[in-house]
Image (cartoon, rainbow, N blue to C red; front, side):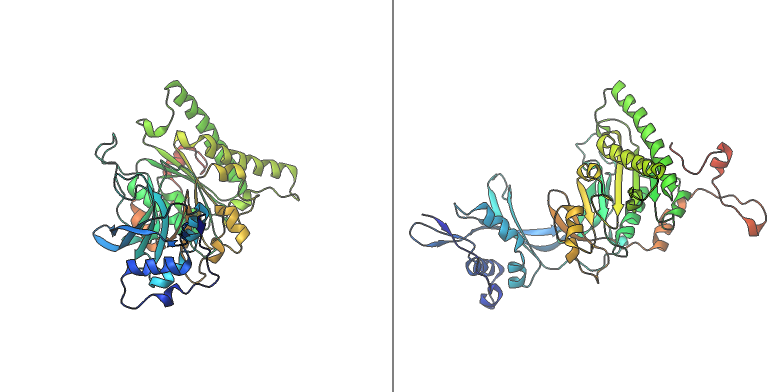
Length: 426
């Protein structure tokens, strides 16, 4: 009978590794010390067998080594999953950052699954300046949009290099994190990068429910079509977006379009909600206010439900993720989930469906987690306000001055001519 070797309660993998041994032998020693294997019918232990190793490259720099092991037949899937979570056995033993994966197609033309141990030379940096972010990737030569910039944003630096989010593949995103841990800086990176690389094709609608203090100035940018700073303005903006979306839905039907990615339409419309908890109805509120907030959540839910194929991209942010502040309809339709440090494991489970955000370091601002089909730790680019506006100042709409200098009012000239409110939908 084949039996799998149980994990010991205490693991001394690092201490058991002889000095001067190479990484591959050290990994093999950790397998043996942690009991990561099975015993065959003869009672002999069998451990993962080394197959190949490959360099891990980021651009022109070799940043680590990937070791590929074939696991013994009969090793339970639960055992493999457990090893992926106990990556500290390897990082402690090797004194290097390590990632553990079990995946297919690791070896070219070989569809079998292998155990992959990735050993890196450096850890994720505590500070990653925005100026070091690479230029926007472009569509490959065999694509009909060859040479055009992808609709991606830089999420941050991970062990394997740069981590990107592709809004064409995952149109909607939720962002969580308590104040002063990187959420607002992340949003500034998102806005800046989109404008820098898609100045003619991006439209931004910002709902800043912290009174407009963070994003009020953004309404001066030509790509920003509106900034709402309270729930009433948010309701007006979202209703306009919803009406616009319905008209575009009819247009898609008439032209037999199913997804904007397969059309000649270049425009993409981003709805960014900062501090969405202010849109959650409370029991003590009067009926009209509850209905207004309920309508806001309905419109936001509709954007995530049908807006993706029409070119709408929603980024829904909250400091305190709960079932009320992060509605299920929005969360389920937002496959990209970002979180920074949170106060509890429960909040982390609401934000990314698992614990971990509560364990992020409190002394490293901008350290976050990104969840899609897998969870990755990252360091978000640091973008200072003066650098951001230096990059974006050329997109500011020229301002006019009227009246005495002590009573100057700034406004958009085109909006004065049209006689419209600041909240626009087109």
